[in-house]
Length: 116
Image (cartoon, rainbow, N blue to C red; front, side, top):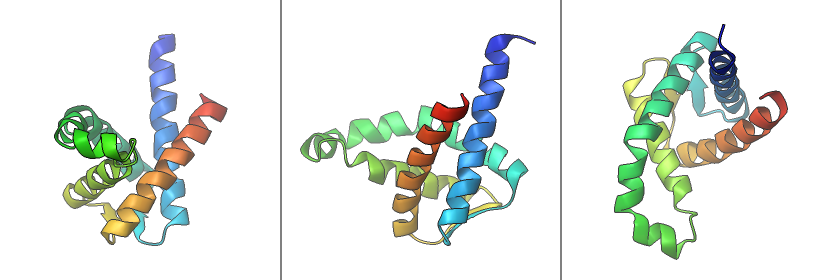
């Protein structure tokens, strides 16, 4: 197998593990299982690729005023959107979505640094 493909698959699995860990730490953040986490991580990736740039552009003044902290809100909105369209993924309320965005970002950074 190609080395780049293996790295991509490992990054995908690590992102799914970070989702599972986030659901362990936050009670209102529910993931159906590891296979569901794999699907959810792909959907979040697509949402980050297609929807996030539009949201960032529309909220650019707020991002500048808050020195980028508004990105937490944007990430929470994307998580909540993905939870609304996926059957095995639920987020109880907006505060859980925003906190989940922070926890997921921290866990992703830690796990990708350690494993990948």
